[in-house]
Length: 369
Figure 1 (cartoon, rainbow, N blue to C red):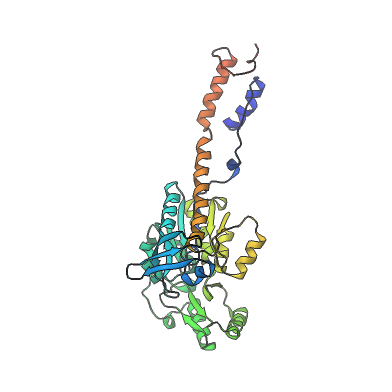
Figure 2 (figure 1 turned 90 degrees about the vertical axis):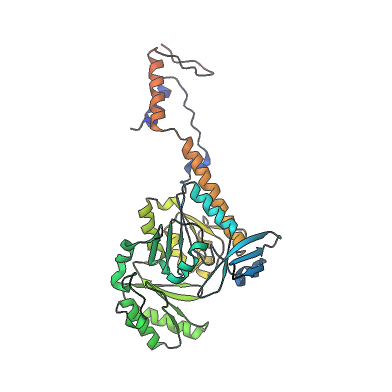
């Protein structure tokens, strides 16, 4: 029996009242890690946020800076991040500051994206400081800037080594690349993309419903064992089943020693759902796909930003809520007495019981002899 429990039983028997404060936050798990998607969550594109009343005031692609203005006239200075697929994206300086506030109170912050290696490396210095970077749909992990080979070795037989020199997808012998070549041969109308990808490849259907339906049929009938897929930004991503965002988050939780209930997920799209399922706290700055909208409707505990769709303003709203929760959790934890404190109090009670000291109890009588 621990000292706290023993004290709770001992004090009433001695005639003392034990008053315990139970703030609502004391039942809330401490926030220890945040896993965030990047495109559509942490960084935002004008074509998306302009539909929600936010406008791009200015943009300088040479200086990699921009200014955006919200519906109420508030402005944010932003950094411009390059993208191989969608062009420059905005991340506000306030977002950077909020991530720093989280890390300052001991919260791990990790980005998890489907972006290719080359895009991640170009964006690295423009993103917030992170404890881990995950890219290529959860197949490539960097921890403190160093590639993690332990995770990559779990599926090396499916996609090959992550550190080999870049070679054309036509020359890679593993099952993932065999499937890549077969799709390209059997469906030449697809837009095939393996450039700077080592653990996944991406397929586009050019917005054609007929092509998309044929691809779905092909996946249903011919997807090899050990390979999974998801949709992201209107594209289809294929990667080893042992990789993926959910498995990457689970691996990092184990690596960092954090529990699911202590982990928050920031996300917006279909390929984020396995990552969300691995976390206990869910924050959505936007609802990009129908599957995410449906999932959010079924999950009342998921928090959709009041400013959802408003780009940098929505992610700031989510991060501010996480910062408040993290700081409150630290205060509650600091207020809890340690076992040493409880043992010291027990000794005082014991001394009083045997007449070796007096404990002033405030109102009410002391223990009777």
